[in-house]
Amino acid sequence: MDNTSALPTRFNVRAYFILFNEPKDAVLVSDELIFGNAYTKFPGGGVDFGEGPAQTVVREAMEEMKQPIEVTGHYYTTDFYLPSFFHPADQIISIYYKARMMGAQQFTDTQIAFDFKQRIYNEESFRWVKLSNIREDMFHFAADQKVAKMLKQGL
Figure 1 (cartoon, rainbow, N blue to C red):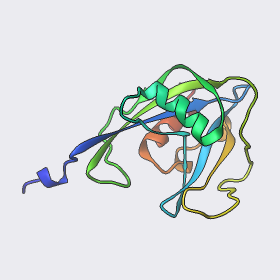
Figure 2: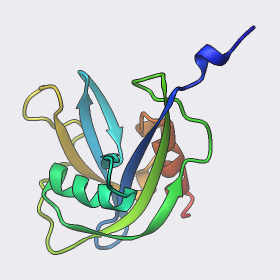
Figure 3: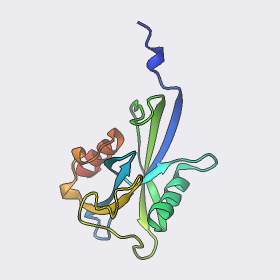
Figure 4: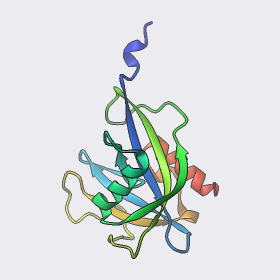
């Protein structure tokens, strides 16, 4: 049987950031409504043409949270084949960076998952999850699950 039709035809490069609170005992997660479905993920998004992945996370933090951040190092890049959850013709490459807030927190956080004011197309809320409470199964995407496992293991 010929499997070539199942192979992806393009790459989709994504960049995310791992942002710890000041005591470094919790990490920021993003609860998002994407295409009408609710997902928990790490903050970040797609790399635009003409920008590097580290620039992407800085831009995404400003766009999504109005929060200036500084990239402090690389954390993880997907090391396994990952087809896109939304577009099967895409192969996802996800790059995760450690980051820190520059200045005071500018975004509103919540203690409740999916604490949306409205259930509109691309709603988003942010919450801190204690590292002691983080679980792979709280995340919907395979790369985020691997990063959650790494965080849980203290890597």
